[in-house]
Image (cartoon, rainbow, N blue to C red):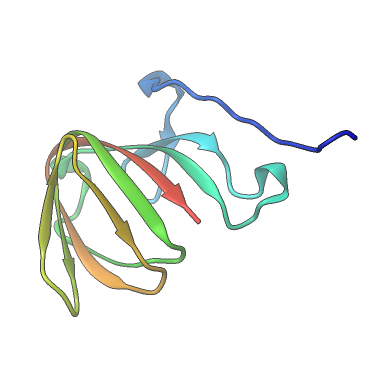
Length: 113
């Protein structure tokens, strides 16, 4: 019996990044690929000079992040702030409003689900 599957592999490549809402993104899985509108993943490249200051963001999806390089601070409106450095991860529920501050040039791997 055949099983349908969809597999994507990616390698970190800054040259493959394209403009994003803020900073740039290298998509590994674009929204909608493989028939999964709610699932995407990629690398986000951002530096403090690319931001207009702290960014208030309300999550449009559940988001899990892993910091590969740099440092960011995430301050949920109704929760404790956390500072993420290289090697740290966090998962944030859809609909949570948080202020993101990019403290150092950062490379983040993310999954929206």
